[in-house]
Image 1 (tube, one colour):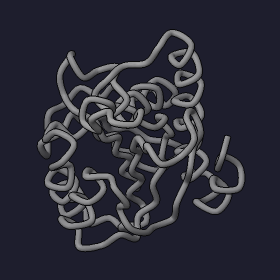
Image 2 (tube, helix red, strand yellow):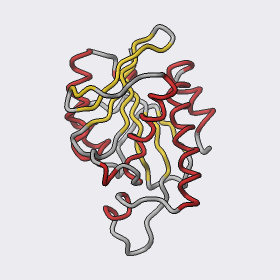
Image 3 (cartoon, one colour):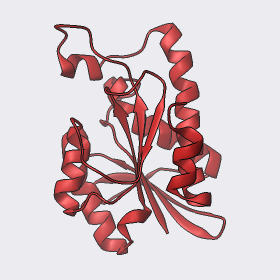
Length: 187
């Protein structure tokens, strides 16, 4: 069983912002796996399906980014899954725009959503897919930057990266984190 969680903020005013890469990737992945993400459960919008005989649960926590761990704690506890079968998809300001970085585990860095998950699960041994959203301009407020949208030219690039991030989650399920790291890191 896999739980794939994309982090973001609920509500239409956040839908196409830099901070919602996780939600947008879950939408893309749901389409690829033919899973409807339309049930409210575990403080999240979820969808359940199967992929190659394996149960897959797609999750969009509705707790807002900084409290994502509350939702994931509940769902991981309920299903009693091995933490390495939780895949988390997030935005990242510290990697190049429109690139991916796959990590097996590790610290949250500057990401408050990841901090919340690690705090609530008391564990950081879950794979994560990070989507590069670019860096804020000097003097620009971080919150304003991550809650901003994309320019037209950035939009096309980020759509391709979201598609790759969904493929990356599938790669992790198919061949493992190591394979996904080799295939997708920096692309």
